Length: 148
Image (tube, rainbow, N blue to C red; front, side, top):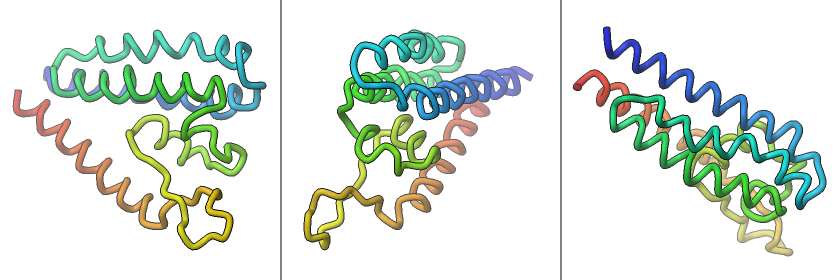
């Protein structure tokens, strides 16, 4: 019974993160860079900081804490000042790509064959690899919760 409660808590945390990242994608990224964008992101920073504390088992709390307290907060802070991977060619990014780049420590590979060399391209294998890695991560978290 305790495992079910922890899975529900983990689902609620990830749902709040997805809603927050959708807010950042649809509203915050349309604002001008600088203080206005930073002030609109201020409610997300403490949310991402305290969300892992609602999980009671160490493995999901640690992984969620790493991904959101450290990684996503840093990338959203860079977005506020138009730096980092979330700002590169922002109008062309899909919501799915934005969420993956914000939530996970991945990088966009640049195409070496392009004449300018400055156009970022997402590796064609990235979504499949990311789905497999996400599935493995979810299975590991579930296995860790069930083993306790």
